[in-house]
Length: 346
Image 1 (spheres, rainbow, N blue to C red):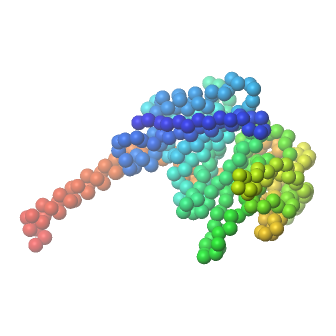
Image 2 (image 1 turned 60 degrees about the vertical axis):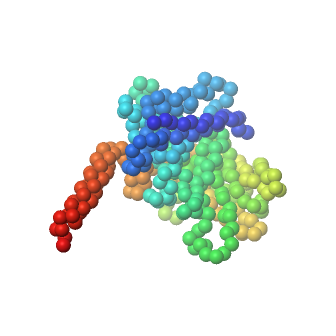
């Protein structure tokens, strides 16, 4: 049983180092189903992961944003022989996110979970977000991520909306990804200091928008009220090799102190833009908290089965159940052969 690592670190334009660590804790050989549904880390592999994530901790030249990616969700990852779990390592380092696969959209399209652990020996609280990356091949849904000044965010993209699944030519939708402020329900980390940044957004489009505006919506009452609408300015865009434009980076100056509130889901951010060919595009509103308060995050029952329940608790039952089914299958087959030979079915 082995584990493989892929580690990449580089310094971005925001002056931060970005550390990406990929892990592979699948079984190399041995018993397959139901064992291959689970990730099987070892005690040594957790030590290696810890070393990978801590390699830049003593370098004060630039802060580090840490992101880990792997195949198995935490719910489908077993503990080691000493009872340790990767969840503790990730929370200890306060990684921005653990990005996983396996489930794709089998348990719904809103698969994410917030992990928060208390470490008495370190007198600190660790946390991180776990995000399933979707399924572009079957469900045509993907989750696009971005990291900006230490804030990691994502947006769900439906490549082919259900109403457009026909013989029409596919048109890539315009992708609007706000990078700040963060969604207080699915992205914000209470242990991460909120920087007084401008409102910022990445826009993925074939052509530059005619205009881009940011709206602040007050959801305190049932009647949603737009309390501010401001034009955003183009800061940067990446011109591709073939002449095609890459993502457009917009920002807007705002007075964040005006939206300080103890209720995380009170204020919502919405981005609206206009393009020459596609017309008006509006992003999905997302709540934010300039105070750094995490909203009341709750998993759906399907999300709990996929991301919340620790399936290793049922592993012994699944293993013995699988063995019993195999033995029963052998016994039934042998019984039928004996019955046929003795003519009991004649």
